[in-house]
Amino acid sequence: MGLDQYGLIGCKTEKRTDEETGEEYTVKIADQDFYWRKHSRLQDFMEELWVEKTGRPATELNCEDMELTEADINKLEGAWHNSYAQNQSEGGFFYGHQFQEESCQVYKDDDKNFIEAAKSAIKEGTQVVYSCWW
Image 1: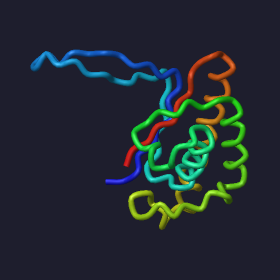
Image 2: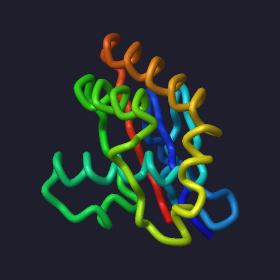
Image 3: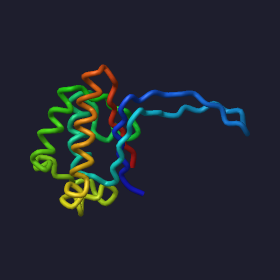
């Protein structure tokens, strides 16, 4: 168990039917996707952004999609340049807070790739979404 995080570019939902049961279900399909595992400082950043954007508690980000704008990505890039220094996680065991500095280094290139891809996508009018669950 723990924190799983997704950056989805060009995210769409598609209805499918289970061949055995006949029940319908929804899947998310993205043109490009990014995945992080227990990147607690990124999560702290996104939770602060969630509260700012929605006025809802950070815990309500769990299993929700948050659309990211150009301004959000620019803010994320600033946090990334500073190694998320303003985003010290107290998220507990499931967030991986005990190795948050190491995670910043491990995911440094992935974060940058996500930021660059998101900027490009948003300029083209493509939706960018952050999602997580724990």
